[in-house]
Amino acid sequence: MASKEVNNVCEEREHSQRTEGELSLFRSKLLKWFDNHGRILPWRGIADPYKIWVSEIILQQTQVVQGWDYYHRFISAYPNVQSLAEAKEEEVLLLWQGLGYYSRALNMLTAARQVVELYGGIFPREERDVASLKGVGPYTTAAIMSIAYNAPLAVVDGNVYRVLSRVEGCEVPIDTTPGQKFYRTLAEIFLDREKAGKYNQAMMDLGAMICTPSTPQCPECPVAELCLSRDNLELQQLLPIKAKRVAVEDRYIDYFLLLDGDSLWVERRDKKGIWKGLYQFPMQEQKGRFLTERQLNERYGEDWKLVETTDLPDHRLTHRQLHIRVHTYQWQGELSSAFESPLEQIAISDHHLYAFPKPLRAFLNSHFS
Image 1 (cartoon, rainbow, N blue to C red):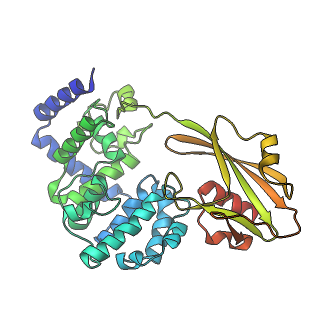
Image 2: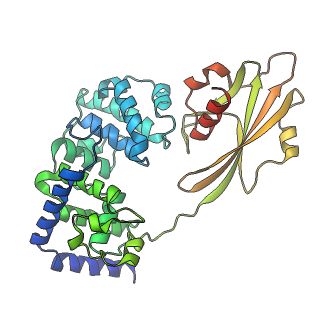
């Protein structure tokens, strides 16, 4: 069935079968469950829009268990939007190191400066102003506005897509423009507009704790009696539907660790692509294969000796599977080694002062702790 046809079927069912009584029951059961079983998180129970914003940005593409410590460190270093606006880019990236998707950190820095320049350092209260901040999309806007100000805006993230598609037994794809519009409308219909912030957090917790991707805990679900896929395991596993499958590309990266006495050579990545603005060793990336032994031996002059090759664990990104090796070269020349910009020489003992991509950070920590 085409997505447009499915969309029409779901729209008809939504309007004809979901009564206000059912919606009211869904909300009350969900909120009662949340009162008793909601997650205890460091950013819960506060109305500070800055801290809510920080938590939401950290949790984009990051699991709660990983983001918890980062949140504490970030708030400790930058307790308010003014202090973040005054931070240096390198400091923010170093604090963010290991979280990935570094554009989030750079966008936060830009947005903090926007708040200072445009709103006098006071986090905005209007939806359009919050939405205008760098890196703040519809989901983050709704989360900030509803949790901080109880504005009647429904959040729609992966958890909400999953809960609503299963509750409605709906096969509208979530990765198409019509599908996303449909689920935004559906989320607004289900929203408890009087308790929007609490409701949104409850929906996210329900998806994270009960209505999980592979093994939903239906017997423990507070809204199971209203769920149209409750007794259909095959449908549960199918939903939510994605129209497009992401093609994963294998990429092979050879990094070159150039050691000269107590120093090594690094370069800073530009502001494009993954790991933007982070430091790395000189590298070569290609499709299909690593560099050959002959290519490695010819890579640098005779004063550089290849002493070791280390295979790092594969690193999965959304669209790429990265296969990584680090080749350690030792300088054998009489004079100090020298390279032109963008390479720069740093002391090995100072490597912890620089933000590296997660695979290289783990390598450095294990070899030069």
